[in-house]
Length: 258
Image (cartoon, rainbow, N blue to C red; front, side):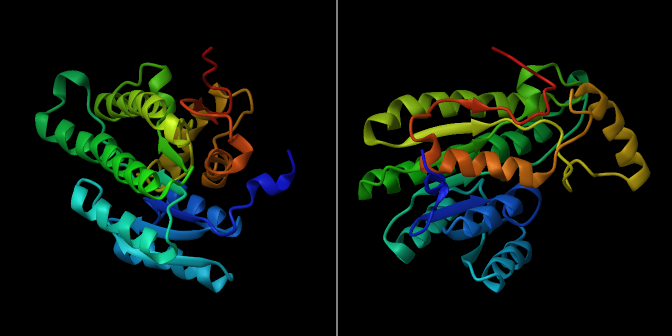
């Protein structure tokens, strides 16, 4: 397959969580591949900054303030993307939040908040994107963001890992239902990635947190957002035209499930 399989020229993509981290890196990379990218995030100014960086580099991008927990807002962004070019080709559901607490100390409010963003927010994106693709007959790609936490017990991360596990099952189920329409649905399950969400402490504390994660990886390091963005690009492009219902694990070899 030629390298042009990664070319997204003439295609339209929506990226949630585009203000920072993996979402920003993905939006920038999809634009570099030729897509018109709609950058959406609860951090509206951050989404605008990502879109501005893309356009300053010669790409095409539009910013959107988006709360993924609100279905109507997700639908509005998808509609805007479709109206812009007449189609939606890629939906990258990357927006997510983190919460840490032991199982016995986890409160309903925390569980509800994480579930609303990390699962229902992804569900909204998947549903609205699939409907738009079916309506226009677009053989598109939907990419969800799971986590390496699905492959191991993650102390203190019940809310996060449970929601990400649900995202995996959503991905597989939608892949079977959307496949007959030519729509592919896949997930990316990153390992420890250096982002603002993982860097919640001082620089020294961040280094202390990364050391054990680095030792767990055969590669001896943690990942960067751009490395996950390349995984998303692969699943979004024709390079993965026969791939659906799969979980791609760019995790440095920390987990190697069958």
